[in-house]
Image (tube, rainbow, N blue to C red):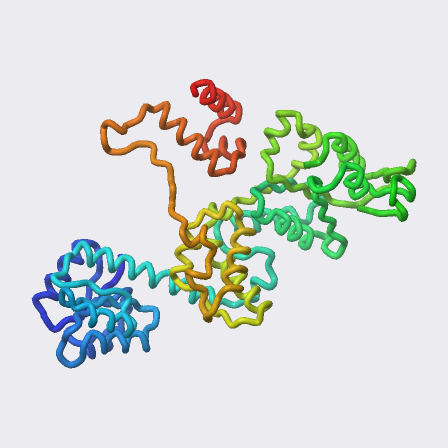
Length: 436
């Protein structure tokens, strides 16, 4: 719980507040003057300072000014007489975080202290990220230190030296190609070409040429030899290449031996695609030798601020702008937004912020409206009013649909989160449709 320094020359009020805040879990220290408070701050660490406005030997405004100059990340709450807003505004201008009117209500003060302490925590985290060395970022493919990302890093290091095929799954924008390139760089083929092919973005004939190459004259505009979701017709050909490690270029009758490693990536529910015969099962097994699931950004919130800091520094350098920090208010918004577009959306958000920023710190107004105004919309399955209580079947239905929506319809991921078989999930979804 937060450590609070109370500053007031009224001993009885200080003692009352100290006892009340102590009962609410705060650790409370006391000082009888501004000078005594500044001395205490030099020798002890506090999360929040609560000071009276009018004191002998120095006002609360004087104390706010001194704290703002010496301890920039330490929030101060000023206690002021009811209705004395001009003085309260002066205190805010002097660096106070908040002010509370007297007589003081302990619950109101407690909430204000918690918010101020959270503000300080975010400010310190942003400061830590800003001052952190950039060496790791320069030499690493991934920014962040969440347990989920560490698991991905560990698996990449363990399998990089192998020639086994890897299947990378994850939502759009989560960084699958970054993972693939990292895997390539750490492998024995790191100095060889990395060919990234978007199978869903090419006509079938062109895709076949990209995958297997083509002989001159194989099709219109095929004037020179060329080495290079997947159509079902090409899947048997790719399966043979994966198994035999030979290719027959389009328009050629000659087999060519190849030395490659296959890394496949998809944002689809691949198991469902196999079951629905949209993807060959035998090819799936050949590619799925090693499975690497990349979690969405919302599942690794510890990576959000480091990524934001990284993107801010990159875009600021490119734009030639001096932007040194992300404000605590922006950090709070970034941490509460669900990032349906994952890392790609965060990158675009910060790029926009840097482009619009007018100061050396990213502010709330620099964020896209959807991020700035986002409010949590978590599903509530039951209330406390007996008339709102739900049947168990309805609670189950709502939660299953909530999980399915959270993973963007990926039934395999939803079944894993719910702890049930995919067949069970399919059966329940069919049941929900029938009960409409």
